[in-house]
Structures are given as C-alpha cells and as structure tokens.
Image (tube, rainbow, N blue to C red; front, side, top):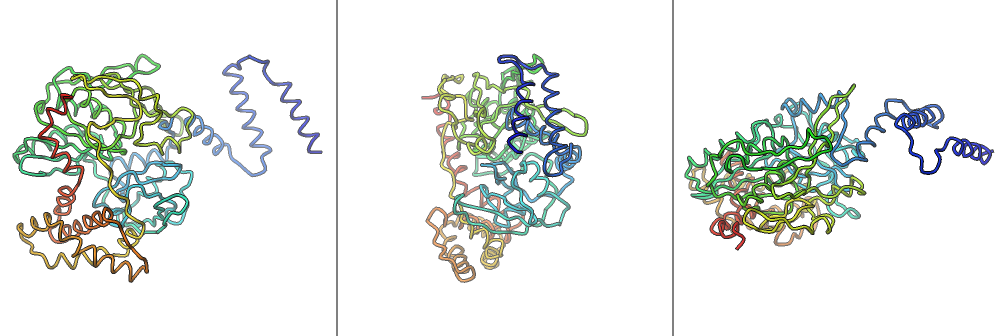
Length: 515
C-alpha cells in the first residue's frame, strides 16, 4: 500500500514538473509555496498552524540571504524598542550565536551578570529552566531583560564542547540599559586619556567628543578610544565621530547596493575638533559593524593606530521596514572603507553557526589576498574584519569553578574582609591600585583555599589564570572600599591592552608612517 501511494505521488509530481531548463515564473513559485503549505496544513502527522509555518518560512528566507537580516513579530519589536529606550532592566550581557549556541560576546564590567561570575565566551543553555537552543540572539536578549529587581536563572556552559563545565547562577536584573554610549572616561596617567564607547547609539559621537573635552580639561594630551566588544549601531554616528578626528570633506566609508539609492559616499561634515590629537583605537573580535567602519576609516587615513585583535568582520548595511504584523531588518548594501576594502567575512555557503564561530578570524584566505594602501601607502587587506596594526594576545579563560565560587559569594567573603583592613583615604586607594604584587598572597591564596574546601576541587590555576583572578578580586576590594569608581580605575590600570597602547604613543608617528 505504501509503495502504491508513493508511486502515485511520484507520477503526479512528474506530471506537474517543469520541462528541463525551464524557469518557473514568480506566480508559479508562489503557487508551489501555497500548495506545499496547504499539504502540510492538511496532511502532516502533527497539528500545525499557518502562523507557525509562515513564520518559519520567513525566517528561512532571511537566513538564506545572510546572517544579519531578521524578522520580528510586532510583540517582539515593541519589546526590543522598549529595551532600546531603556525601559527594561538588564543583566549586562551582549549575546551572539557561536556554533548555534547563544554565547556571551561582552559584558558590563560591574553589571549583574559579571558580579555573578559570567564571562565572555560562556554559552547560555537555559533561562529559568527553559532551553534556549534554536533561539536567535535577540530572542535570548529579550528573555534576559525584565522588570528591575526581578531575577533570571541562567544555566551556563564553559570550556570544550565535548567536556564542558556547567553551572547555574541566579542574576538580579539591574538598572535599565543605559542610553548613553560612553561607559568610562578616565585618565590612565598624567597625559593619557581613556574613553570606552559601548555602542553607536544616538548621540554617540557627541558623547565621545564631550568625553575627550573633559579629558583635555584633565590635561590629557593623547587618547585611547576603546571599541572592544562594541557591536556597532547607527552608522551615521560613526561618520559623525570620524568627523571629530579628520578634516572636512574626507571620505569615511561608502555604501554600495543593488538600488542606486543605497549608493552613497559618507564624508566628514566639518573639520574636527581633535584633528591633531594623538589617537589609538582598541578593537577585538567583538568589535563589529559601525565599530569596524570607524576603525577601518581611521586606519586607511593613518589617523589612528589600531591595536588589539582582529575585529568581527561585518560590513553589511541594514535598513528596517515595517510589514504587516511585524518588522524586518534587511541587508541593502555593502560598506567599503576609504581605500576600497570590503571587510565583510564570507557567509555564502556557511551555516549561521559556522559564520558566527569564525568571528575574529581572517575567514577565507582568498578573500584577504588583495592588498589595499592607506594614505601613507601602508598595506592593508580586506575580508575577515579589520586586522589591527599591532596585534595583542587575548586574555586567559577562567575556569567554570571560578564563576561557581563567585556566585556562591567566595570572592566577596575574601575581598570584603581585605577591604576593611585598608584605609579609606586617597593615598591608600592609590597604593592598592598599584600593589599588584600583593594581590596574589592576600586574595588568590585564601580564595583558592575556600574553593578547595567548599567545592572539593583541586583548583590549580596556571600563572596567567591566577593573575587574572588576582586582578578581578583586587577590583572587588576597590569597589567595596572606595566606591563608586575605584574598581573601574583598577581594572583600567591593570588592563594589558591599555598598557600596551600607552607604550605605543611614543612611536605613534613612526608606526603610522609605515617606516
């Protein structure tokens, strides 16, 4: 019986099939889609709805185009808008898909998730007991957000895929996501200012310009602009920010698309206020989109030295469109740097999990073969993101038991007791921030002893991991003893990327000249 039904179906298929080489019209393709939809709706073994089937078809269509076009229902769109407006409380995580798993791309240093021990690279498996497999990063972000003071239970996986460490933490949602773009403005030393730009939201350029003005009021003569973990945002804000460092009428980047209306050269609107300010930009694999456009432009014009690790590799321009009962963000153009580089990492022929897994890598070798030249004739290449002028190593990965111990309060038990022994005056604060030699003995040793006795683990970190633990525990001491900003100051001054940047200022002109 089964064979007769299959044979009949095959015969019907052959009868309706197009002649070899013939191409179906748009109307015929829609007829085919409608016929398949109706057959599934009528005959599929499980009960299904048109709504679910059409949504799956929409998601499939967009995924077949590129990894960055997406659709949201009206309900999700309204939640995303509320999140962008700062009306929902968050835990301080930026999420991206890596090998299909929602993964922490970056985090707020003193955010709720960071205080609970979650780290970049951690993979989220469940939220409040519900699996997140198959969800988009935006869907996971929405589930992490909620009312201020509410809690979300996050099940996390860390380490190798085949033998990961797993743990669960309960995180209290903090204040709504800040609408300001700049999260840190500090002096690194007597002449070096530091600005951390988290994303290219509204007024990002104004916020950075104002921050630099404040730093110059503190006697800063050179500035580090930190774009690490910056996922991008409004590309015109990148143009406005570039305008602060370049002369008037300078090309920042170009967009090219299928429609002529997309083709545009974005140029600086005025002579910047900081055209002569020595500038170093920090990037990493979490720097994407508008961050890369800005870094690529400043690199092509030899206006700033780029330090860190290869950026994400996204150079696609999206535009949003309202559609019935939803919203679609569609890729409409390519972004090119002033030298003509297309730095988008290849996505054709790759599953979305593969695409995100290659973040921070050069991608396909053939995509990076062509050499482009900066204004000073320095060679640079396209494809696979922005390669920094000075490559810096990444930090060590902390073990899962670190986060379990932090969520259990072991860090506060050790750090808070040390904090109470320190003076509250500015001299004591400065001494602690510069006392890295003391952190191991006073903090790491008792912390590990507590881990071994309470968690019954060997807990034998190598020197690099131990040093990073010491740094984080010391920052906890500073947060407690000298609130609200001493912890951030300690993390900045002990940041190896920042220290490397400071060391490059003396050779900045030489490095940018390509000699």
